[in-house]
Length: 92
View 1: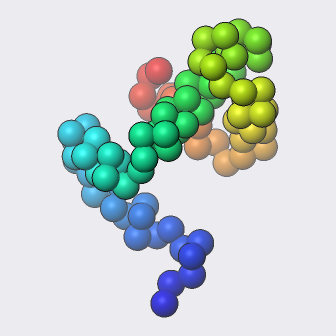
View 2: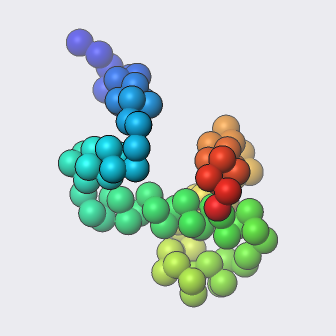
């Protein structure tokens, strides 16, 4: 039995997706609409922080809470670079 924090199979499943359509149907089955909205919002918050936007500007544009913005900011400053990598690859 795998540990609950072993996400290898999930990562492998995501890496197997070949198109936006495959990604869409997989994530719509896997996540609730609220979870998808939350992840999408966090990605937008990360982009805006990297673009130098203030917390107030981000709240106004996205509706994200200052707690969410702080959490994303902490990841940008002390995390492993996941947000930056994806944003650069997607040329957001």
